[in-house]
Image (cartoon, rainbow, N blue to C red; front, side):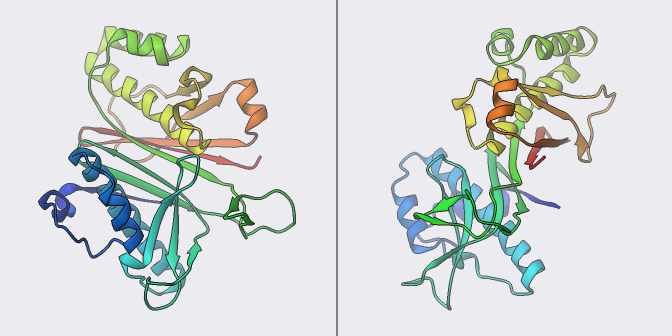
Length: 266
């Protein structure tokens, strides 16, 4: 099951106020924040962490019956940029070790809104190549891998489609534009968001050409307000490099398109 949460700056107004000390950050996160100089980047980073921490807190409460304090939950980033969740052992974070949590975590933010999703990872049942952290094998497998993305629906110029979309996707977006410009903007945004979500699930981001991934959406009269499946197809080389089975969903909320892409073992 995928767990998800959407939050805005209205849900945590202390971010905008610029409070010097945010009690829900750990000491190491406070140090990381001090190195972020631009206000917008600080707001995005904080809102993403706030959303992720609240989602992880809720999941821990569901699975263990214990509600961990937000400052005892740590949201870090691996060398490839993908986020992960951990918690401090003991009653206080100072001097305590971090226990990495068995979840695949994804964070996205846009225009003062953050979207975060997580899915539980499976325990490792046999020896072999598993994800590493600090030179030690983790006790859980790297799959499933979840990518989430949030994009504001807005017009995108034709050269954007030509530079980032496949011929199939360009044709679908332009054909719909002839019928309904507003629906075409939603479809174009959803395709882009779907690609971003898939690239996050691959833990590669925009290091991979977005045209190596195709996102296919069923026709719609009204944009879905509930999570609705769409199709992710990767080219043969990516499929060989990252074997597995794809599942994906999308919805529209207010002025945003949201997507989730999940890569599981075949």
